[in-house]
Amino acid sequence: MASAAPMIARSSPHVHTQFCDGRSTAEEIVQTALQKGFVSLGFSSHAKQDFDPKYSLDEAREADYITEIKRLQEKYQDQIKIWLGMEQDYYSTADKNQFEYVIGSVHYMQMPDGSKLAVDSSFEQLQQIITDAFAGDAYALVETYYQMVGEFVARTQPDIIGHFDLLTKYNRGKEPFDETHPRYVKAAQSAMQQAITGCDLMEINVGALARTGIKGPYPALPLLRAWRDLGGQVILASDCHLAKYLDSAYDAGIALMKEAGYKKAAMLGRHEELFEWHEVP
Ligand SMILES: [Zn+2]
Ligand SMILES: [Zn+2]
Image (cartoon, rainbow, N blue to C red; front, side, top):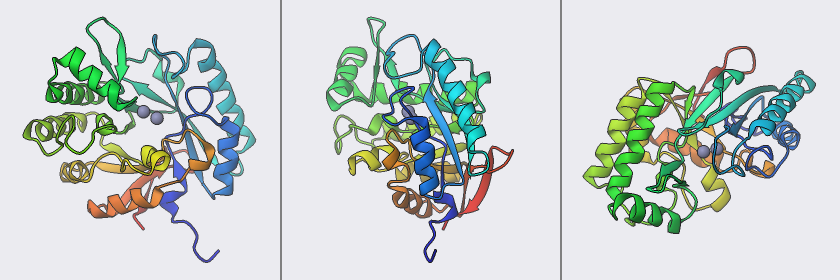
């Protein structure tokens, strides 16, 4: 083939299926990956948690998920290396030892009534979190979110840091917060400094961009530059919830890596090693 996709684009460590909040089956994803020339693929269902059950695995679905991914690993072993992973939320209750790798992510904020609301559901819900849990101070949300990210990654040492600045998903320009505001920048940079003590690999997540065509990859360029300055590494991730988006917006992710000065990036390994390294094309 004259213009084969660059090696770095032919893998993803971040994929959801019908076992959690994805819309495709795991096998549909594998078949799409094969059509697209993927050489490795990682499933990362939202780990079991004791709230918001539609969004994550539960006890029964966790067992089924593990069984199914192991079946696919075996069935397709001559065609693609498949990894059994999970996306562990700050509040998840899963035993991570059942999985071959972990993406560590913060999605939820604890509300005054004890319930938990995700920062990436809608603009209205983001506003509700700020009003009800942070007395209207958007930067107090920012500071709490990033404290959680830094502390969680340092403590749990995931293999990959998930969508570092997810709370910006519904941020509109400077509303409800300005990403150049000193309180925002300080909170994000402190989180990176703490996080890198637990994990030095951050995903470039193009999931929202692939789905909406609007929200750029996580993290934003200034944060990615700061991550590089700290010595942090990167891996391209689709955060795919529907097979057809498996490598959508990868070009934008690669462009962001280059813009931040990255010459090499990780991808899931084709053999026994979890990660391989490739030049950024
Ligand atoms: Zn996530
Ligand atoms: Zn995800």
